[in-house]
Image 1 (cartoon, rainbow, N blue to C red):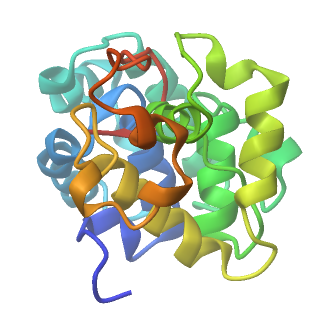
Image 2 (tube, rainbow, N blue to C red; image 1 turned 180 degrees about the vertical axis):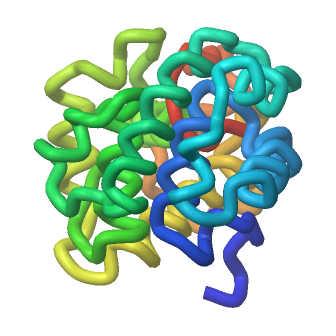
Length: 213
């Protein structure tokens, strides 16, 4: 894992720190989340500290990220974490009952921090999958059954954490909005890459959650 991008939430001191990070990463560039995440866990290093978190303070901490709608949900999540001393559920069903947690966050927690299989389907991964089969995408493509089934088919049963981190980094750095096809080890398998230059990119950026480029 020495070649992976270095983000502090990938090796958190507390598992609930990772949960906070995954919530902050929704529709937000990962590099912009780093200073906000570090300020957040410095202010609230232990779950018990979250008891003092006010909505106003949370709004102030995450102000630079925009998407103000996250503040009330984060406040509710902080209250829940404080009540359980930072204990995080280890099933998708239970995670989805937490405030601010949706399919992407629950899948990320499963594969990155709970040692279980989870399908990572964020905007960058959707773009990569659509390019592999040369299909267009929009803001709703991530919900399409064909794409979910394709993501499931390429996600291994073992070493899921390593695969998903590699996939996130690859889709952020190589198969980016402006792709670096000349550096791609999958070029021979990519339908879009094989015809690049003959048609415009069929994959505009969509609204989604997770680490984005």
